[in-house]
Length: 320
Image (tube, rainbow, N blue to C red; front, side, top):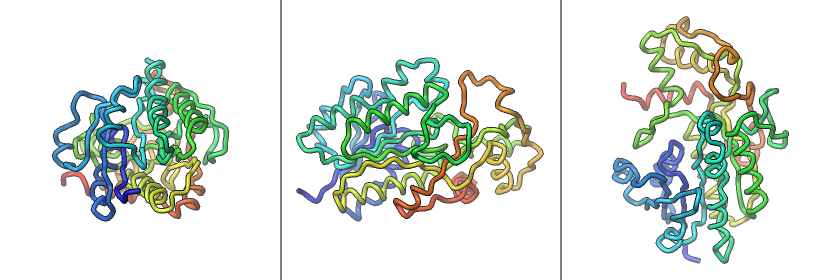
């Protein structure tokens, strides 16, 4: 086997995808790594291509699998595939469940991987804390999955599909991912930046006090994926892992906003406490999907940073 290893990021133009491309590009000097990524739109952002000249883009339609063949011919079989592509806006999933299922269940990707004669690829798949029902605190990986919305259901089906069809995989159930903006800015609003902008303008803003998550700093998620990639490349032992990936803090939106206000010195009286039941978001949302991350810490010997530390780094990364 050649020493050159190949990494493919599915959904490389999204928020996590761009952060992964950036980090792996920086570390590819230290070990011989070829990097490719897929994008859905007709052309990937110029800014991204200019910043990462060594990453090869491929246009792929995940619903049909169109585009995977050209990866086989031009790039070859990847050693590691990280799947960050999803329709992850819960309301969009409710509106179009068929589309959500066909994109979020990676059937075309898994079928393509199984077309290689040797099953030498590790699939790292991003799932969500929204697979849990949200009726208790600190869910463990082996607790029952009972999603309350289409997004959660599509992600549970994706997990079941991967477990049934793949012999070498890691499923990461991620909470809200926050952190710095990407090289080519993503269109979705980023949680800390949005809180900073409304509070910084002195606007009174409503925040939920009764919905709990464990927000995780984006570079921690990237580190976890790098640890798993290095593990597979160095020891070649197949995995079948399911891990909760969250930060160490169980927080409501109010507590998140208060942290941003404290770090910035904003007036916390701008933060108005409201109940999730007072607002119709067009989609049912789980109340408490905080996660126990002890399996992550034990398995990878890695501790995600606190929300406050992540907020400080996010704010430092913004233009002063």
